[in-house]
Length: 281
Image (cartoon, rainbow, N blue to C red):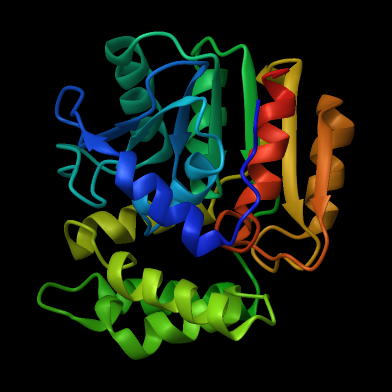
């Protein structure tokens, strides 16, 4: 399979030219591609389907299905708590309604949702975990500050979580590329899509699900055809946890040098190459 090797922002634009909204049930869903293997992409916390468009844009011969997680983007919130268990149930139902996939790629919080769903019985043959959450985010100074931030922001009427100043600060902390143009593109993406969540309560619940769980807890249920993509400068999902996951699961571990937690923005071609290899194309 041809993997397009061009700038990340161009890969995003190529995907945007081909993408069409085609909802599945109550889930806002975007699809692109007419043939080839069918791949489900699951985005991370506070994002929506836009974040993974660069990966999809790099593989024009594949078919991609990209939902917005419940409570994010255009998908309405769950009618129950946004816990990892309930996200797992949503994903299992979504896959049942959507039909079979040749592979599933999940990023960050999406890796928790997918791993939990697999441990609960979701059948998946090939999986790519991109920057999986392999260490608990609960405890420590940074985590405590994040707890306070999301707790204060969960109050009715609060606009704290949508503060563009704070969103830019998080974006600057996550982006590791030295390329000023790419950094600007990443900041613009976060400014546009990092606050498209449903309610303060739903994002508070989602934050607790994202920060208090660990993919390693579900590692024994993951399939044999497993690839892990990690950035060696990832401060959210440190490399030590990725090594532990690869050792426990015998996964193929692909480390992207100089990358952090935003490999889908900084290195979409490399992520797409790993996906193509997993699909054996």
